[in-house]
Length: 190
Image (cartoon, rainbow, N blue to C red; front, top):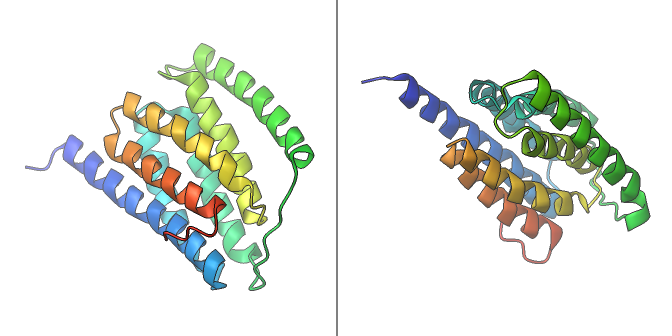
């Protein structure tokens, strides 16, 4: 029997597969010099599904984040060149991102708490704000984006577990492994 719960679960599985495909392809093409633009196709479609699912679960900032992921996927697809190059940056480069992110988390978390029925407004704000920053760094080949993802994925595992989206929590556990792999290029698990 088809129920709302079964449809939600099926959509979550599709979103997870597409999201894993994006990250796998990104790491694979980064390590092999392949056409990284192709990685943004599953990112685009997975983000559409996740945007709808997170909105239904009242994870509003994450829903908005997935809207931006859709835009980033389009940007990444067209802006990525065939000349793959990794940029390494020191801590001073990241300080403005971290400062801006912290202020944005406080503001967005406060708004979500006061204006919505979000269940975990500050966690939602944290993963959303810093995911935008990490995605921007990822699209621009800044290698340290993986450090952001490691922290984000740890928080997201908890966030999605709290909302009983266990498949998505598992996705972020896999993303955590992939982020560690992406940062320590020599491991090359994927």
